[in-house]
Length: 333
Image (cartoon, rainbow, N blue to C red; front, side, top):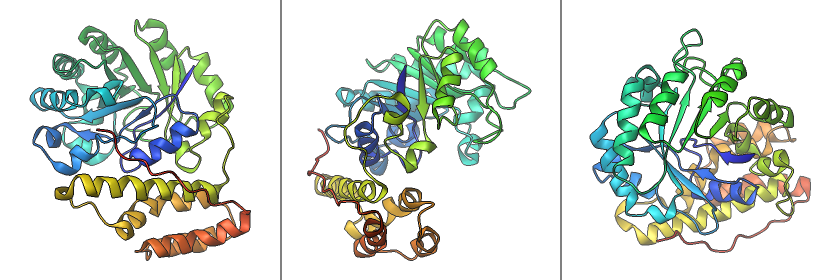
C-alpha cells in the first residue's frame, strides 16, 4: 500500500511537501492550481509549480471547469513535466467559492464534463492524468460509478476517492462500503482518502481494497504520520519544536530562492513569509502542550521572523528539542 500527501490549499507548498517526503510519504501533491490562472500567465500561480530538491515524487493538481483552460494549463505544465509524476484534476473540493465557480465538487454532478476535462488534459501532456473526486454531491445521491466510468473512458491512470459526499465536507461518516464497490469495479488503481489518522483507519481502507491511502489534515500536525502508519523507518522522528524549526528553515530557504529567481513575483521578505507560512502550522505542532492556548491568542499579532522564533522558543526549552538547521535547498529548474 502506498501513502500519499493530499493536496491542501494554503498548506502543501514545497517546504511542507519536503517535510512530508522526509516523513515517509511515497508521493505528494501541489496545492490546487487554478487552470484559468495558469493559462493566463498569472505569476503567483506559476510559482506553485516550483519544487525543492529532495521532495520525492510530486504530482500537480489543477482545478477548472473549461476544457480550454485545463488544456492550456496542461501545456504549461508540460514545459516542466520533468518535475512531476502525474497531472491530477480536482473534482471534489467542497470549498464554497470553488463549487460556486463550477469547479471542484460541482463536477461530481456532471460526469460527462469530467470526461471532457480529463480528455483535454490527456491530449496536452505526456504525464499520466488522474482524477481526485468524491462519492457524489450528497450522501443520498452517489455518482461515483459514473465518475469512475468517465475517468476510465478518458484514459485516466488512477482515481483518488474521498469516501464522503461534497456536502459532508470534512465531517460525518465515511462510506467505505461504497468505496469497496468502486475498488472492486475499477480497472485502474483506486486510492482511498478521508480522515486517515490511525492504523485502524489504514486497515479499514485496506479492507476496502484500495491500492493506497491519501492523508491530508493528519499530516499538518505530524509530517511523519506516513512513517508511523506505514511502519517504514524514516530515521529519527523529531519532536514538535524540532519539526517547527526545520519547517521554518525550509520556508526561509525556499522563498528566498523564489524571490531571487522571480523578482517580478514580489515574494514577501523573511518577516512576511515566516509569519504567513508558519501561522497555522505553529499551533498545530504545539497543540496540547503547555502554553499552546497562549500561543494561539498571540499568533494573530505575529508579524516578523524574530517574533516567530520567539514564539517557538518556550516549546523548544520545554521539550529539550534540538534546533536542527536545514541545508539550503534551491527550487529545481
